[in-house]
Image 1 (spheres, one colour):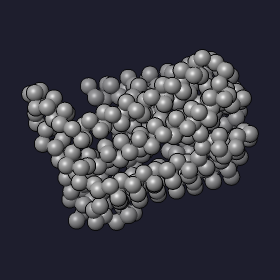
Image 2 (cartoon, one colour):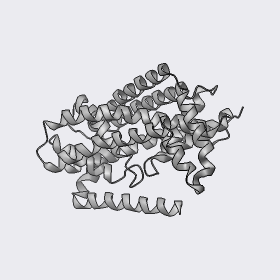
Image 3 (cartoon, helix red, strand yellow):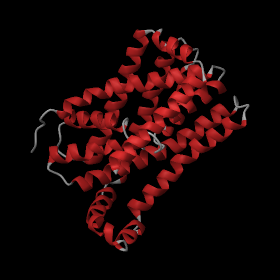
Image 4 (cartoon, one colour):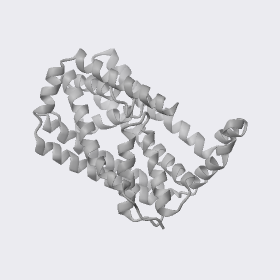
Length: 307
């Protein structure tokens, strides 16, 4: 059943993407991609690697286990690679299985910490999406663009509320306890909650700081991707695009929001005076650039040390 759902969501995403491409000028999109300036594309990949380094440092702080940093980095990269192939990017939870094995720790505890990590990520995205919405509001002329900005700005709020309720209240526990089929996982959920609640405020502050640094670094990735396509976009605009386009990849309709993110990108590019085709080509290159870097995580599939 899970595999069937994955196949269906993938087909939905690909169908949306092909619909967008062939509704627009497919030949123009292909021409833009084939004529990229490779040097800028490589620089974008270097900045994205720095983003992944900062995220791995964040994991090191959060998990607080005696795991070599290079092992955390490999687990994180492969988790990011898997996340590109799953709706809602849930494939990232591979990291919990990888790090639990490397440290002989409880998977439930690390899953809980990763859930808190995602909660903080979305908490920062709420702030960033609001700033981005204000930035782009002066360019907005169409109602559909206003609706898009509102929905994307609201989505992280819903996620954060759900995560906070799950971690810091017993509401989820009560629901599980009253559902016989879910009773078996109650112990795992309690371990997740305990691990999250044990993280002190100082570590959370450092994690939020690293998330903001990651935003600034990914702004450079977006900027150099636009340069590789010869688009006239400054760094500030690229920085403001980042939270709105990365947030939509978490929408659990298709793997990593494929098709939906390209549609959102085309709308945002139209807002700033470029074409719909420019937006689709840009988002496709961002995906390809990120996947190339995250593919370094395949090293984690080699036999890794256990303690």
